[in-house]
Image 1 (cartoon, rainbow, N blue to C red):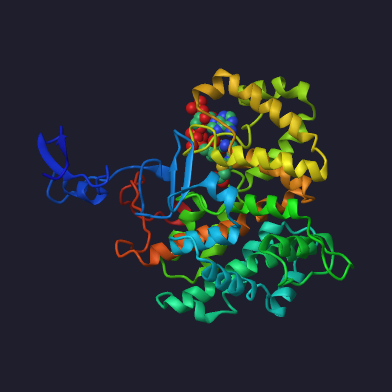
Image 2 (spheres, rainbow, N blue to C red; image 1 turned 180 degrees about the vertical axis):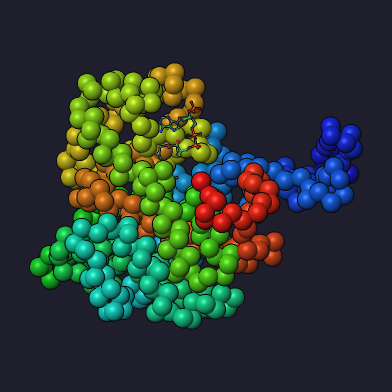
Length: 429
Ligand code: CMC
């Protein structure tokens, strides 16, 4: 006997039996529930998708109550401790960890798509010196679509593979060029001898020396941060990637949409806000006063705290905190860390945060490391977008190959006027 849900409609006293699969009912099965035959039928009302699964997925698993995150079944702690970001990107996109030769091939292909067309460089030159790097990134991703008309062949596996190499390969280059433009410094072209994070550091920080010398501790720390940010199932930007992708737009413009969603302060923009907040607090002894302001609603939210899914410590925040210690051995301790630790200590003892299950999320400590690595805060969200590219693309490809999926198109509960007659200008107001 399949599992079912029995629903009784008190308006009509009718009963309905709805099948349950994977602890879920299909919203469309509720449509049969009607008072009159010509009714539209029952819908669910779910602003912000608080309790709606929009897809089946095999990519990322999160148990928010237990603080568990796994990519393709592998715990994030093991991946962050043992893999490189490119291995993890391969895993997300292909479902399995690569063999040595698969990884060599993958790395070769990504590395050989890091250059961007010179016209894209000119396009980026057109931005004002103070343009926000995320604004530049979003627009440049969309502009790339005009250079690769073959990216419209969505159902050709080889064409998709090529766009994936291009996007994973080029996003660090675009991000680094946006940063250098911001500083008024000449662009640094990719160096194929370096690792993925090493090349990114070179494109950011190389000056007149013939070859950039990568610090292996910082290179590894950046790689770990990339792994932690690679995917996070149906978050706001992944949902946008799928939503734009569902109209069969090409992956460049779909990713521009996803990156725009990431830019917001409640999503990937939070890490930038955390640093602003820590600076505003200024010193450890001011933390209690700040926490009281947050609780009374005067001080805004405690940025880097709380999560729609995690009602426990975000497992990524734990790994980031450990990574911070290694980075600080090289760069010296960021004084903002003491304020952050005190803020965490006080908040985690406070009834307001305990009751609402608000814990540090991935953005709470990442900004402090980014700052120690020499990044200005405007670049932080770009650092999130680089690794999230593999997650967005894995979500996008899964969507395209899922026969259940169609163009995304939610319903609404219309509460506006009923039909009424047009009022001429002289009779209005
Ligand atoms: N500081 C103070 N109060 C908070 C916070 C916070 N950071 N987050 C949630 N609350 C309170 C909120 O006021 C509400 O209280 P009440 O029930 O009294 O009205 C309750 O907790 C539930 O909040 P919510 O807004 O219904 O929760 P949500 O699931 O819609 O929001 C969130 C999740 C991440 C948007 C939110 O926690 C937040 O704004 N956090 C700060 C921004 C942040 O750090 N964002 C990064 C998220 S992790 C990275 C990513 O996914 O991009």
